[in-house]
Length: 399
Image (cartoon, rainbow, N blue to C red; front, side):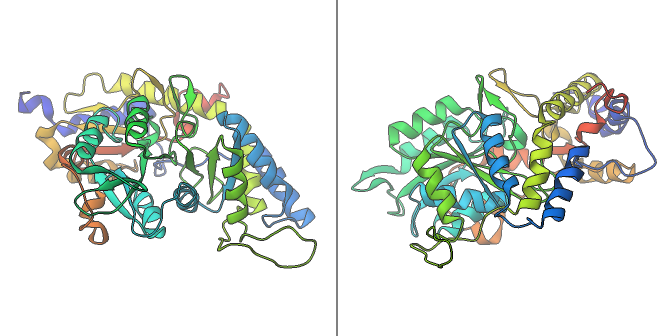
């Protein structure tokens, strides 16, 4: 056990200052970088009048996003929650089913499951990656899973376990190989919640390409933002076509008639938003390099801080470091809120992780396994400023 004097939280704020300096304005947690091309492309939308989802930037964004991630197809949507909901729907998740998901995640993961009429089933995460722990998943399935006529059944609830949702927390890839193997053995489709992991790879392959489908997010605070937006990624052409059809109100092609052949959604991304995405995809490699430099700077400045460590990518992964995170030692977790206030009062925006899903009132009754690490980590993890332009030499043009 470390000596109390070594665990003083008063060493954290000076380390942040050494890493990113101090300014006259609040240093935001994560602000977007909009390159000059963003103005040009958005003005083009306004000048031509093509502002809706029928504009050309939508298709261009989808094509270039697919190329950037290496997947066969990308289908742009109005937000990441919509994208994830459609992923579950296309995977066959139906009312009355269950979807296994981490309890440590943003609420959109569980909400997307609920929007399908299904119930989230929470499992624990790993200390190293903050995403689903394969051993926790295996342990839970070994207890509750049994074969059924239409798939794997939860013997406690008699509901079908229709999917496993792996969320890559803070941009760091989960332990994908092990989870893929477990899903295959239990014959449960894998869906990736890659909302935070654009630009992250696992064993050289982009996140979002290991499951049947995946969802990414382009919310205002994401590494690439369209103001609000998301996308469905898949290597299955038929699923991509179906996703595009359903997110365009399931309208059948016709020059003027309005015919629809299924219950669909009006989930397509508008052209103006897609134009922002196209501009940022052009500089995504630069932003990823800058964020890596910033993460390295944090690791360096926190070497002598004994009460916290910087969350780093696993050895099998290349993370995007979307949001840098400090993991506090258990002995100082009670001081987390005081530390967050101290850092924010000093002009550096920071925040805790999300409230675990099983502690929210609408999911308190959801099935779950043991969640000890989830409950510990939610009290000990703090996100600190992570904008790309905070990286060393960014302002000097050395991007």
